[in-house]
Length: 87
Image (tube, helix red, strand yellow):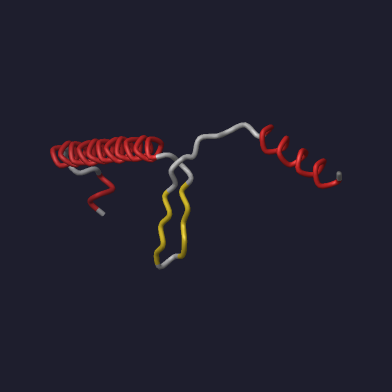
């Protein structure tokens, strides 16, 4: 009788757990050890797209800063030297 009750409880417990679809994982083994990435391939692709967009924004900001600095230098070169620059 105990076995029937125990088996019934185990079966009820297994049926009560909602079924969750399996998601793909990425497992990388390298010199730094094992790394498990539980994100789906779609989430990994989305993150890669975001990373590329951030890199491009950084490059554009850096280019703009360099251009501003070059323009500032060009303007400074056109001006006569300030008195403190003569000393």
